[in-house]
Length: 318
Image (cartoon, one colour):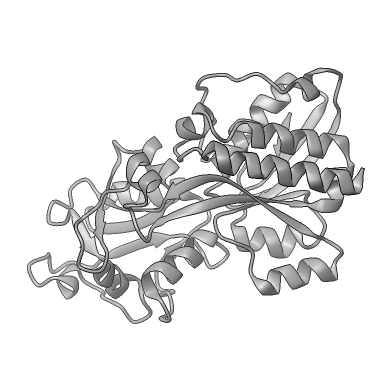
């Protein structure tokens, strides 16, 4: 079963529910015999719904397995769970940083990275914000940088003379880190906004206010497209591009399309339940389950590299 490490889990209300799309079978290696034990996971709220779905499918097939899943944010997952030896996997919406890798090494944790999907990071507004449909990256930066615009007309004079109500991830979030790098560059992300690691909270806040703006992973927009509206973005004087499966897959949605990862502690692969779960996860990232959740599935070539990396790592610890 899925149980809680804390914050936001399958058993806690207000989280993104598990989509019950097309079912896929377990691998032969997993289904060949009974499996039991615990797999502990924390990290990215963006990757959370994909891990939740695959965790549910895995534990349905193996009721003796307990998957502990927590949505803490990428950075908090690394700092307080994965590099502290409290979890076997860390969901991540950005690559691990050098300081985090060093902290892991000091604790005897060796992170192995596997890409599991591609995301179209999505900026949303209220359905009633009929004055805006596309923003440039420089306009986004003028809103989200430290000391940035306070009122809509500060961004464009023709826009309303009303305060911009901002909602987004906290500083523990890989989504904030990625957004800052892609949009703000060397400028600091503003801190005077409503921050949360619960993306559904951002959805609800934007839904309630005509003058609100927020951002999060594409899966949360897919689940709430009737509640909020996604903005197209224009980079470098180019055309406006809306976030979508196709624009993220083809690389047109730049720079806000990004890879999503899971990191696995190499030593944890010595436990059969962990390596079987990871193998199951990596066997299902090219198919419908990823798209049903709201992300772009991996190419078979990338998935094959994942499997080869896993086999090599397992051979070293088993």
